[in-house]
Image 1 (tube, rainbow, N blue to C red):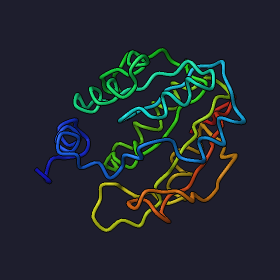
Image 2: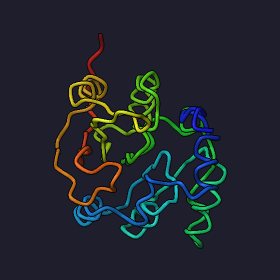
Image 3: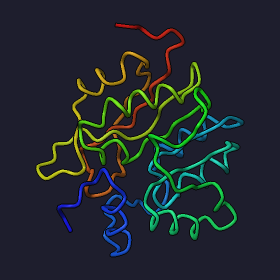
Image 4: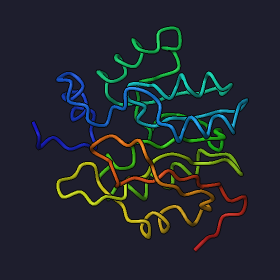
Length: 202
């Protein structure tokens, strides 16, 4: 089943069911904890590819109205079980087609979602993120820069990331990550990208 593409839910259903989850942190990374100490709600937050949903509880506890979405039925079932009373904060669906309202989120949190997508999905990712974030809202989280000889996860260079997001966002923070999982150690950065009020057009 290793030939199943990571762009579809079956890839993750198989791995969740088998307990093969090298991307699953089991909690909340320190960079996000620091961010939430400095940025408290109210406001709306979206977590694409939310997996087990640990960060949903973290954002909610900091006053944010948060929703997570994942297309893996097995992953969503796991997240709902772990979240207990916050189970309704995670939904099963496709980030690219789910009927969210445009410009409706103050924060979109990125962790292991972009790097799970094959590179040809990246333009769709950037367009969707830009459409969903409110003016002056932010995209924050962890970006996998690699290298990686056997993706997924699919690495992206800093130059490629700038080209992908730079038309709609300005990078305002970039720092090392000290508590990465083994799969990502030394290969990811914590970054914050702020939505430009006026977006450049080609």
